[in-house]
Structures are given as structure tokens and as C-alpha cells.
Length: 209
Image (cartoon, rainbow, N blue to C red; front, side):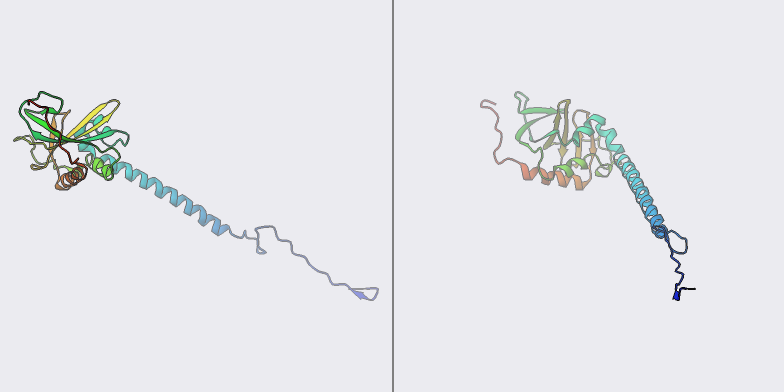
């Protein structure tokens, strides 16, 4: 087009909305959708894992929950509970506070140790509430037991006492009056844990005993 000897060219300007291409499609729409799907997938996976963890915790400790009872089991794995080890030997009579009776037998407490917060205690105490730590088929009611270690869990509501017969592989719930054959792994673990914390000095009976 000529106007006054000058040529003007018509220029077409293309205006593009932000986020939109010249073809009319929204740029990045595919990546946004993929991002949303990834977030949904991650949330779904988290829900599945949480449900599995809950199911595992319930099923892996069902028999031990019956063995210990709800309150005792909770006290055993409560990190705030005080935990004491008491080493035992067979004794004659029960005339002082360092002697105690388990069943028909009287034991002397030869050593004591407070192991609250000790390294390795978390794994040791949680093993007590796992079904795999016990042999539920074996008959543990026959024969006697010679306990050499007590583990006492204390909180404001009371105490839970666990007795170990390492020779026969028996764990007893003293307050509940129950005992059960235990797997070799948990017995070895508790025996090793106790040996690391046993005091060098021995508790002696008062003179005249």
C-alpha cells in the first residue's frame, strides 16, 4: 500500500496468553497432570505402608499380648519405665528384703543394676512382645524352673517382672503366674545384655544368716 510515496506494510501481531501456545493448547498441562498423579501415588503408597505397619504390629504380637496382658506389655515397651536387673541364686529361707520367692522356690538376690536407658535395651524389651520370640507349641508347664535373672519394669501404675531360666530356655511373667518356652535368639540376647551390666561386687546376706 502506497500513501504519499511511502510504503507501509501491514504487520500482524500475535498475542499469546500466558501459559498458552500458538496452537491454542495450554503449555505444561501434561507435566501438571503427571505431577498430580505422582503426588496421589505417593499418598496412596504412604497409606498402604501405614496400614501394613499397623497390621504387622497387631499380628506379630497377638500371642504375647495374651501372655503379658495389655498393661504389662505396654509397660515393657514404655521408654519412660524404670528397668532393673536382679541376679538370683537359690537360697534357704526368705528372711530379708534381698530374698524373694518364685513359685515354690526361694532365691537370693546377689546383684542389682538399674539399666534404664542402657544401650541395646530398646531392642531387648521389644523382643519380649514379639510372637516370634517364643515357642508357642512347646509345653512349658511341666517340670521346674531355676531362674537366674529378673527384669523389673516399673512405672507409677505398678511393676512387671520377667524371670529368665537360661538353662531351660524359659521366660516367666511373675505377676501373671505364666511361663513360656522362648526362642534361643531372645535368650541369648538377654543373657548377653545382662552380662554387660552385671556389677562387679556381690550383694552379701546380712551377718547371722
